[in-house]
Length: 117
Length: 110
Image (cartoon, each protein chain N blue to C red):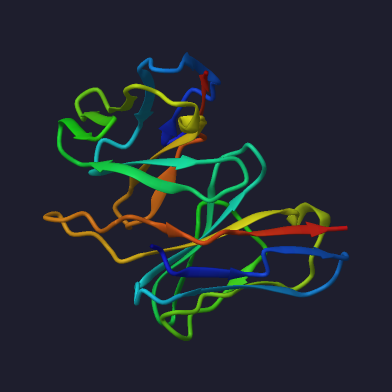
């Protein structure tokens, strides 16, 4: 059973507001990821982290920012939300990968569905 | 060219049939491959991973990998209506990032 939690699950907010999507995992995983997914569309990696104080931008350009001050916590922030930010945001974590035993499985949170009016 | 290519479907099969889902990838250096299942409105969940050429079986699921042809497939035997979902093929790149395909929607008809 995966122990990764996202809040809020649903958020409706007006244009220009600052929002933070929270993601926490209790598995001690070093690697954490944020994906963006529109309904019926593919997952796009927007941010990832390999450990504390490590953050990288993903393949899809995003105006959001992330931080990794603690291993278990990987919040995503939008300073000024716009309607184009409306989407589902999925957080995931991984314990890493070893050739003898694949531990590269990503565990996903339940997602945060953001609607910006 | 996308790194991971899948036919979007829908792939429709009758209950009890074998469903065959296919995926091609462009990076010959990719070593690890994953199949995730995503129900509508839910998060993806891992079904299988494979990193050696050949077949890997787990219950009703068989993953097949052919690195020479850059091809990964997932076979679902005795398909059930509960298998109806979107199936995502993914590979792990050299930076330990998981790159997903756009997914194939499977519909199992009762």
